Image (cartoon, helix red, strand yellow):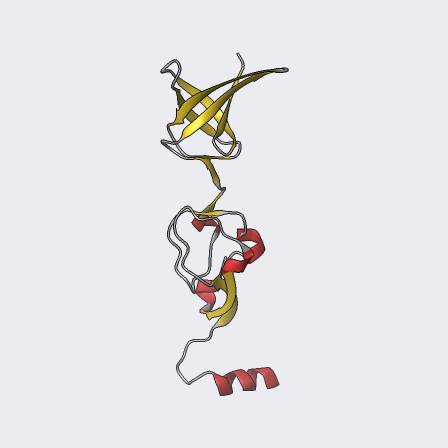
Length: 143
């Protein structure tokens, strides 16, 4: 009862009620990876705060679009970090048991860890299907 009376005393008449939620402390550009330090607590409308990710949930994820300072972050705003970017030179690795053969190639799409990606082998000029393994590395399954 006392808390409600204090809230009424602080909230101007006619002003919408707000609640504390994690919001971005700075503007984050598309492709940047978020960390816990990118967040602060801000007051937003309850409908805006709904489904906001916590700093721990968002840390390590990559922004799929430009995110403005002071806005909460939702799951649709983030994706797994891209290890392979379209147009970048990548190492293509064919691994079969203890045998590992590598070649250079060019990524034809973006991909995160474990995601499928098509690459163009610069040695053979063929398009291959692989899986993003690490930064700039694509693994091709032995057939």
